[in-house]
Image: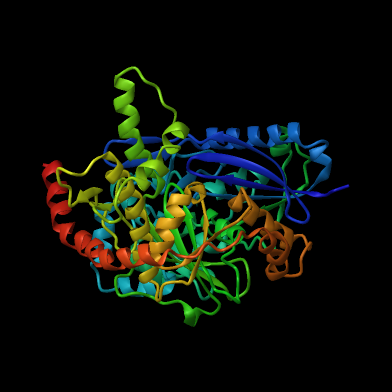
Length: 517
């Protein structure tokens, strides 16, 4: 009996394969750490062949956990990390390593394009700001610096598109990534105007067809079946980009409450639901993303701060590094267990921390590849506990900044991502935004969202609304109300947070120029 759906989520940190039953209950999951390398000049690349090999391993491992998996699979869906450029040639072989969303090499090109008046047209078509992590700006950089590499390419993928190709042999991308990068979110198709503004109309032949996973699937190939241990011919669905799938699995798709949804992972994604194109609010700063959702006429409007848990990793790494120098070893889990104590022993908002720790700078609600993290307000009375608290508050203020750029602040936020498990973060973020927070019992929201798209595609549900009612709503936890006293403190500090990053932008630019000389 076929009664299992598989969702693959190839993220920045981990590649996962997750098995669900037809009602959305998680049966089993397997995972492998993802691997990528950083390069001088801001590069961040990932090996395509290894990414597919690791994905196939997670599928074989899943079969070890789920009896008779191959004969029980109804469909497979794949999502993965967004943005970036993964080039292959006519024969389907990689032309180079995949460029990731962490890649900052196209920063100068982004500044040039954003300074042109015609970039407003691109923004209004895509509903998305331009950043160095996107395929469009990476195309411009490659044209200038690596023309031979582009000339040898036949198709430009994103991570999930590459895996879909390896699973099925089909070259395609999904409506979310296809349109926020090169298209018009209203038509869910590519736009010649956008390609012209970017100056890459001559590369249109590299763009694969856009397929909607709620309506289209392809068959698992013989080669992929041999590699994964599954059965050739099994339907495979190309899901939407990972943030859209995670939002779907975490509860953004709620037409009644219209909550915000934040993914606090390596990066921070903050979203609101728009049920018509007219509900999409485009800001003057030309930042954020507008992504089509897997339902007719529905969109997720997003602002993304580039680095979220990367900041937590950094500040905890300072302490573990000092301990290591003394011969004391502490795991990341042991360090995280100390966080609540540090936060409770420190005063709220005594420091401002700007969470721009990524080498790629910041992309929301402002775009600046030169942006860098820092503390404002340190005095001799401050200690390590104050710094830890300030880092968590910095993430919360970044979230507030992002929501404010999309309109009014939400009254409720659905939280997901690794850091959402932290009571301290939930309390701080809820107070900073002035919203109740709610998490889901769902462990793997991204893989679940991908599997939900596949469930609609194969006819298990008539609509995404019906699927959400069974897969998502019952798993939502109780709302945790915002702490009014803490919220009042953060309300007073929020303007200072914004003023700080506005004031420091010339400093970041000057520092970047000094390093370049």
